Length: 73
Image (tube, rainbow, N blue to C red; front, side, top):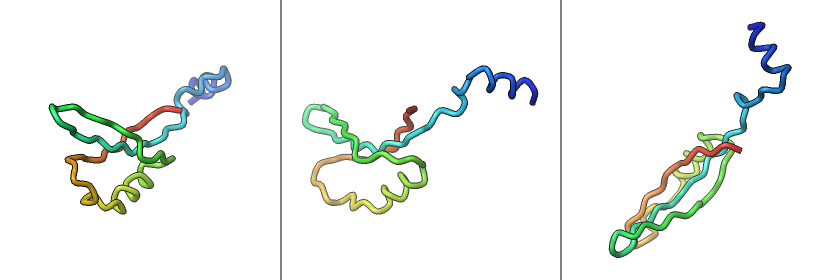
């Protein structure tokens, strides 16, 4: 515990990096071309999952899927 406190007082805050979660839509186009796009960004994974559950995934004729990607900020 003392070692952890010493590290924090020296300015090592890498352990406490803020994480964000992006919901990406991945679409498959002709000849295997893949197109990715960020749909939304959230502070918690639970909010991203709730967003995915609320989407109407059948609204597009293209073959696509959604995924959650964790990013550091």
